[in-house]
Length: 422
Image (cartoon, rainbow, N blue to C red):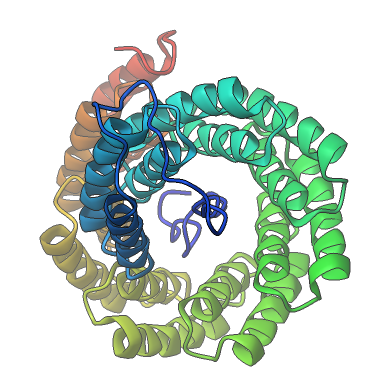
């Protein structure tokens, strides 16, 4: 339902695994002699120490969310380590791994995929296929494949990594459970919702045993249980799950932490789906205020809460207010995110929905046409969101009595074509 606030309030895919720790030489060990990339003299300890410090600074920048700067640091350190130590040295590969991590966080998944694939290949040659560092790189490769929509490839790689982790670490090692968590989420992307829900429940129970019921990783998986239940239409169970996660996160992280607020947002989605729009409206009103205080009035998550508020104004039949809310959120999203951003288009469509309910079909038609044109240009004519916009356009033409034009749009929609093609 494109009019509904999009899921989720935190990144859709599970967070990538942490990078392996930087190897530290044993006390009294001689300086590295260099490898295939070394140029002449053995590098001095001071040079390697400085590179280690720069590496740690890059990691620190990433923790602060300064991913562009972090990527620049890690790329520079990787190049210098390659010259000093060789392309396959563990420290060189650690820097390249961190480069991939930063690129992934920036949404540059094609570049991240190239880094991870090369790191995984070199680690397999040097360390073996079942070494934890090799498996970490392969798991991150699966992660970015999923972000690129290549879910079948991601599934195959997650399955292989999981088998290796279970064989070498055990079924309930935290790294094994992280891989199972990611596999479960990817199953939902493949449309295997029952399998995803069952596996996610298993991982949540295992993490509670191993890490504790209120460990952040346990709560992430319980959050995904709620998502899986929602995808299956089991909204009452999903609501109960999200509320439990919100309460636990409030105790562990604090009531204003972004993860706590993310769980509250999803509770609002469930309330709306259950027909409890008045409760959802008040939840989103409070959530928007909390988000604005914590992250600013123009933050995407603040705007997501305000969008949810507008959706539920419409559900309560308060369409004049809903229209004003949709227009306000759309204007801010266009300024902050850009006119073609998916969230901006969702708000623009919500404007058309409200115009239609107010009987202003001619105005609604112009908005629907605009959304359909942008989605076709950005996503392609066979994308589900593009087709949904075309359906909106045809429905609007019907309401205006222009049945011939509506039929033409329906015929174009019905023409056989493969997703991803023009």
